[in-house]
Amino acid sequence: MFALVVAFVLGIGQLSGPQVVSGHALAESSRPLPPPATEPSTPIRPRAVYRLADHPVLLKPAPLEPVTCDLPRFGTSDPALAAYYTAGVACLDAAWAPLLAAANMPFEKPALDASPILKDGPCGAAPESDHAVAYYCGRNRTIYMPTSRLRSNGGGDAPATHLATLSHEYGHHVQALTGLLRAADLKITDAGEKSPAGLEMSRRIELQANCFAGMFLTAAAGRGSVTPSLAQLAQEDFQYAVEETPENNAHGSANNQAAWASTGFKSNSTAACNTFAAPPAQVS
Image (cartoon, rainbow, N blue to C red; front, side, top):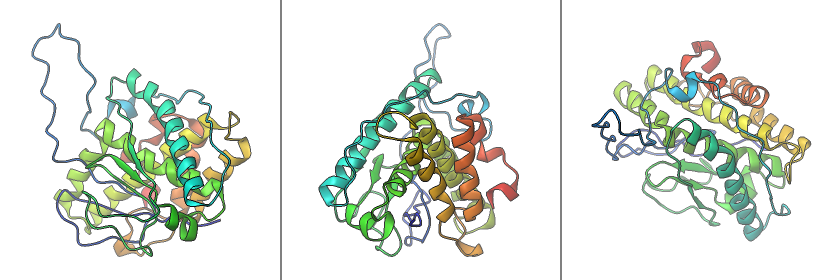
């Protein structure tokens, strides 16, 4: 199995550079907050809520309904991997859109960049290949899955690792849609990206994305192209996350990364993924 390594992009302003991590996203902080409804009788339109532990999606348990994924035959060529990721995103869309609609949260499909080579984008310069293989950028709501990197030092020929990586990055998209990502990012900015408080908030973001990935994997398990074995292997893949040094620990220990993915997989409940209410030991 291969370790998950993705680009970590934090803060609202310009970053100094990427780090070796296992997943992250950039909050779309340039977008204004939606105005409040002016008339009590006006139906409340779907909109993000900028809260953390008391976010409505986390306070009210909600499962992902069973979803059937139609994934193409897995292959490691650039076209084959791009097709696999494209179909995977479509299945993730089908899983998460009804849950967000029921919670009166906005939904839009993420863009997917599955080019062989990772290009510069609105979240800054593309990280070097030894620092990242995939990441999510909230400024343009795009999941970046560069096929050459994922083939050579990301997932190799193990479809479960590719599916785990994609599910994790989509978890950041869910955070962006609901407002969780921006609320957490503002906390990190206030505390300082490298401060103990900033790093802890980063870990809470990342570990929740693992939990959301676990929810999807169990919702898709045993249906269509996602066999029970494939889903189980993808969920277990999080235990191979790269361990970071304490001063750069923005994602949590491998044990905690695996634990939160398992929590989502076993519970299939948004409330169980409330990393923002978890004690520090569970997000260390």
